[in-house]
Image 1: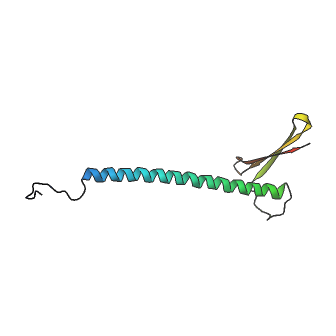
Image 2: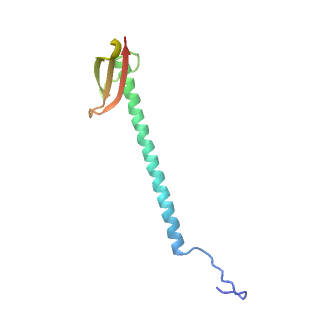
Amino acid sequence: MIYLSGIKTNSGFTLLEVIVAITIFAIAFTVLIKIQFHHITDIQKQIERLEALKYFKIRNLKIPGEITTDDRFKIRQETRTIDFGIKQTTYTVFDKQNRPVLEIKTYEK
């Protein structure tokens, strides 16, 4: 509209402005979802590592705790002598798919 003063006034947004705004919000939302998904997977891995540590403590160190009937994990123990006669024992906890979940090393003289 042209008013008597000769100034054209616009109200609202053009289609191009709306498309650009929606694109920016979509990209930002996608990035936020990806970051959140990454954090959720990290939390799930940490929970699995904590459960593997609990399993190790109950089975190998005889620390009292709830006894789990399901054997979700397996433990492999390797012992070797390193420098100065120190004995290194490596315990590796595996899940059902034989993927290493946790590795614990102990040292004895």
